[in-house]
Image (cartoon, rainbow, N blue to C red; front, side):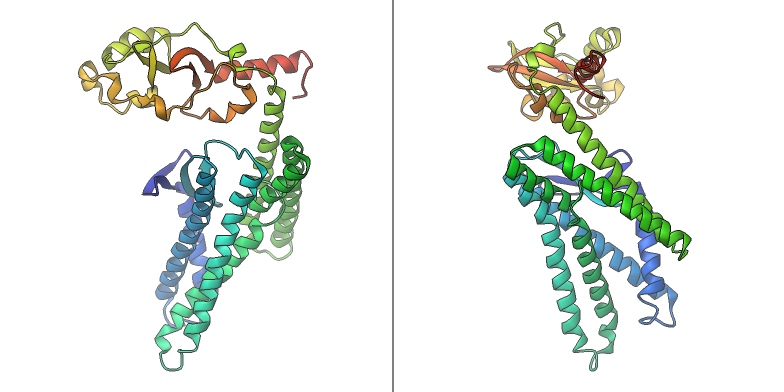
Amino acid sequence: MPGSFRIARILGIDVRVHLSWVLIFLYFSYGLAQEQFPSVFPTSEAKAFIAGAVTALLFFASVVAHEFAHAIVARRFRLPVSSITLFLLGGVASLTKEPTSAKGEFLMAVAGPATSLVIAGASLGGAAQLSHALLGAPWLLPAVAVAQVLGQVNLQVAIFNLLPGFPLDGGRVLRSAIWGLTGDRSRATAIAGRAGQLIAGLLLLLAAYLFFQLNDPGALLIGLVAFFLFNIAGQSMQQERLVRAVGGTRVAQLATTDFVVVPSGTLIGTLVRDYVLPRNLRAIPVVDNGRFVGLVTIADLRKVEQDQWPTTPVDAVMTSASAVPSVGPDDALGTVLDKFSEDLPLLPVVRDGALVGLLHRESVAGYVRMREMLGFDRR
C-alpha cells in the first residue's frame, strides 16, 4: 500500500503502518481519554491520555493478531501473504492470490473474528479477575479499565467483521457457503458483493443519522468505513466479471514471443544504456544458457546507486526466477490475473524452465476492452 512503511517482520511477513494510521491512533487515544478514563484519572488529563494511547496500541496489536490469523490459515492453503498493513480503517493482509476452494475461503475468513473473540474473552476475563483485587490494591484500577476497553472493542470488531457482506470476513463466509453449495464462485462473489454494498448503504444512513440528529463526530469514521466497503465490494465483483470474461482464453493467445532478454552477468550500466532507455522497458528477463533465472525491474535498479551501475551485475539486484510468479502457455488466462501486481507489469511464460514468452498486463486490458467494443461482454 503506497504511503506505508515497515515496522517489523514476523514469520516472514512484513508488518507495515500506513501514514493514515497515525490519524486514527490519535483519534482513538483522545476519544478513550475523554470517554473511558476520566473516572480513573479524575485529576490528570495527561495520565488519561497515556492510558488511552496504551489501550490504542494494545488494540492495534490485537488487529495485527487478527490479520495474522488470516495469514497463517492462508499459508496452510498455499496462499502467499506478502504483508500486513495497519491503516485508517484497521488492518489488511495482502494476499498475492485469492483462495482456490470454498473450504479454504471459509477457514481463512473465520480465523480473524475467532482470534478477536479469544482476545475479547481473555481481556474481559482478566478484567473480572483483577476487579476482585481492587479493594486491597486500588492501583490496579487502570489495568482493569484498559482490559475492559480492550475486551469490548475486540468484541465489537469480531461482531462487525462477521456482518455478511464482502469484503468483511462475514462476507467471505457467505461467499464460501454459496460457492460450496453451488460450485459457482462468480455467482457467490456477486451475491456477497451486493450484500457488502447493502451493508455499506445502511452504515452510510447510520452515519447521516448520527451526524445530523445527534451531532456525533464518530459519524465521520462510520462514513469512511461505508465508503471503503462499498468500493471494495464493487471492485471484487468487477474483478470476478473480468475473470469470467477471459476464462476461456489461454495465456499463449495473448503472450508475446517478441521480447528482449539479457544474459546473466550483464552489468547494470550496460542494461540501462542499451536496453532500458532506448527501448523504454520496465522489466527485462535474465537468462542463463537459455534458462530463465530472474527478472530485473526499474524498482530493482533503483536499489543501487548510479555510480555503482558500471560495476554491478544484474544478478545482484534481480528478482530470482523462484520468487517471480510465472505462468505456462497453456494456463487459462482467468487463473493468472491475480499474479500481476503494481511492481510486476508482466509475467514470464515458462515451459520446462525456458522462457517462451511474456504476458503483459496491458495486453490483457486491451483484450478485455476489445471484447467490450465488439459486444461480447458488458462493461
